[in-house]
Length: 368
View 1 (tube, rainbow, N blue to C red):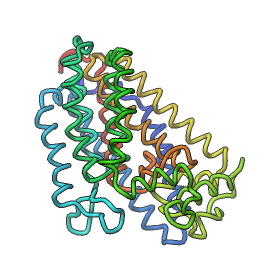
View 2 (view 1 turned 180 degrees about the vertical axis):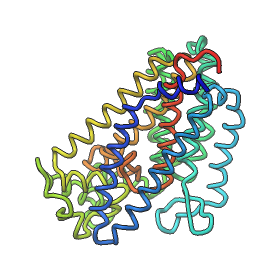
View 3 (view 1 turned 135 degrees about the vertical axis):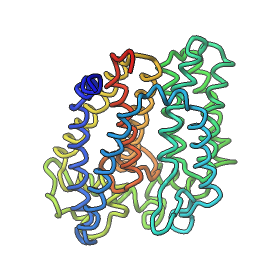
């Protein structure tokens, strides 16, 4: 019990406070975005998701993260099993053009959100086991094959945004572990070569449309380019101080689609302006810096790699979401961490945060 008290004192409460502030911003913006849709139920659901997320964090803190290293094979198989289940029993094709969700009773969840956490743990373990031979192409190939299985399964759903997220944190973890620059260059060349191959053989029609409308939204302003155009209008309308909560033209009058999920940042930009956007981005920056510092101070490489994986995952989602709302990236349907409406996404991000806090809490621990 004495050791438990020492561990509790080592929890990074600053990181928790920053994430809680981001969550509060999210609840406020969801309330504004859904004002005409009966905002009370959206707020209740989001608050419940946040509470469940913090409960998950508490439960995760009771488990020494090194225990997860011993279970990485079962975790790997379970994560891939979730993704296979989506291919067999997934729903969502009729509405979103892809089967990415599993429906149980009246509820649905997106398994890939939880698979990301499992794969980060597994990659951290396999990279840690092979960190001294990363310079060998055979080792690099083994790690990429290990990561490639879930990436292929996700691409088959199809889910371009999550495929990109997996790829991003995979290479981020390998790079931090000591990937040589010549291997980065080789990977970059191979990635460039694979673009036309992916266009011909893997990308679905709607995914190609998203890329084309990203390059020129005016190709189909009332169809495929509608989301991007309305989002940019909303962001531009906010100017410096914004129009005020519940006063956004694009959001309150229904011009902006998916405003409580994918385009919540557009609502914030229109109603709170550049000031509100700056506050949120600063909070995200503090969160990511704290994660990097925790990785640096971790007692072992396995813990550091877990934190780095989580940091790269969150950074990708932040950049992808903000990028698509302002026209810097194609519309990929990636929500904004701790802000967008959605129980599965909130819970999975909270679980990832729990792993980060777990590593930090045990940074000086020898025996327990």
